[in-house]
Length: 450
Image (cartoon, rainbow, N blue to C red; front, top):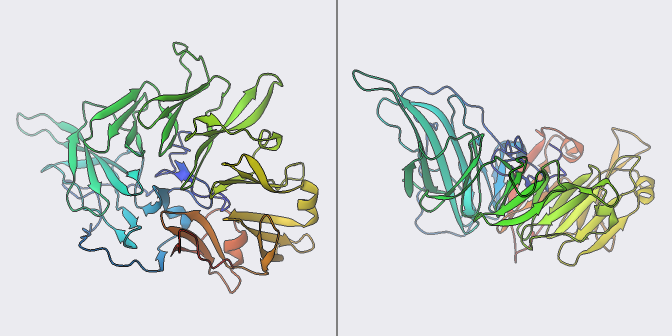
């Protein structure tokens, strides 16, 4: 995973949701991406989670200023303004979940209790996901179980769904959904859980597990407020292309000129965007389109945003950051303001190359720049610069904020050596980074910026 991309496109729990599009992710985009755990073979009547711990809530004390998460950023997923781990989104043979959810109000990790299995039943599949809004998060568990035939009684296969508060000891509601839908993978939205059966989609309410709406096709990607479908059935009004439906099922976009499904999901605390590659009929070229789920319209970007290719693209505080490292690129760096519809900062490819920029990251009007020294792949300079005024505020850094949460910020800290180079310039699984959550002050990340 490229750390320039926040697990925003991690958006969703296994942002193995990416396997069906991001996705059925997600995905985001300013630093890391979802997590899944390898399934383990269950035993009869065994719990699906190892040593579950019920979290009790009485009063909410003042949360700590900082919390360190165990593991790597790849182990954690982002949803609803928080981080969670220990969930699988795909149902498979056997399986295990052991979710931990960061409660932004108390600053503690919550471990929901285990749903029950029927006596004598064997767990044959399990999945879980977060759903709801930042102020009202829920955990949805889906268990499939088999009770073997005995005497005159036939084998019984059953799929159960459960809704928990994030620290709950008992489910708020449960339902047998065996006759409702098959379950291949799941993802959460603000109002429900999106279930991909492999041959269609069923969305269940996170209040009572009733069916909110269905779709005859599998989702291409999911955001907290929308689900996109790649249309291939000629019986639809659009023969090909994409249709985006809101979390309540309302159709909010039909575009026949999107032949490849979702390219990326970008979301932070204020904006939810889906990036599509579109065919531009007048020019007969493929262009990038950013669909704003909130306004239900494409962003009216200038030409540089229309022909991006595949550069790093992230979002932070309502600003899309684009940087293209390739020699053939004409993009360089851009910061596009979603609300104002304009470029807040730009550097041409020539300026970008002249500065020997090997890698650059963006968060909260700050650029974290890695400059190559004499073209070396081993020697670098590191600086922190503000935009748009281009003021250099630090000549070294080991901390890098990557994802805004609900009152917190996810920060990567280099720990491999005194400079933390592996964390700052590495790609792929980053074992040199400590994952820290730093509580915001006055709704703003307080630093450190270095």
